[in-house]
Image 1 (cartoon, rainbow, N blue to C red):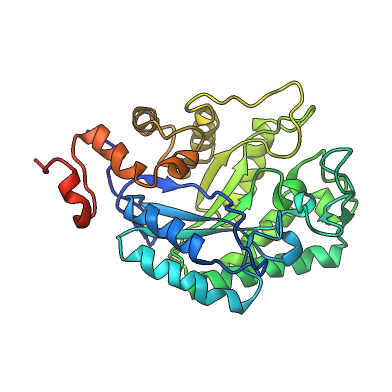
Image 2: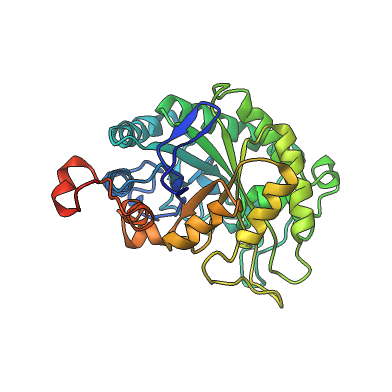
Length: 343
């Protein structure tokens, strides 16, 4: 029995298959206002046409100075909502579901003057030195996440993913080498993330699953390992995360420990999280090869497969992956003449 093509359900979210479009920044908001434009509309809708079960919109920031660059998406204003609703409504026409990844870049906000962070520690010696958030500002940032989640619900998104990976603000708070605070947010490295999760759970529908992306390990010298990330994730799970999306690194330049780049290189992290937390897991990391993705599901390393760069190379990679695994293509009716007839 094949797995990649099978339906999947978590709480009120029902997916037609187990293929997820991973969030990938497009750096294409030319007006610098955070509002998605026609590029984003075509980009996401084409992947719905291309057969993805779940599409996760790229890192979308809760504050103008929380963007990686001024060309990134935002959700800090009610003015953003109509443009997202337009994308959501069109994606739904093709029987795909769509979520949005909300985030704050923290010390990795390249255009902020200055960026903010848990502590005044730059990404590299050459990077801007961030300003440490005050305790009150941390609480205000939690509220910004909550307000962005409200807007995501208003726009009609089917799920929300909190970005707690790749060295952005939530990751910075739960990283022992980046968070050197002396207040309660330094005493408990999970506290900021926990409060963000709890605040979002207050404003989303009860049957909407809450996703969270997390870096399973850091690659900078003396960075945290898998045991630390699992312990942090257990607190996030208790706070209300329903599904974890497992990646790694991104906190800064790698040291002696380097990330790999072979197909499925992060599956061992996904497997550990799935076993330790007993929670649905999205795996990611060079999984556009259909047989690798199918094996990951068959081996119970993960419950869903996220594809990033493969979706950039081929908007229809979900259709092609299912065709390779099952021998049957299920394209939209407009494209059926290009595919073999269903058996």
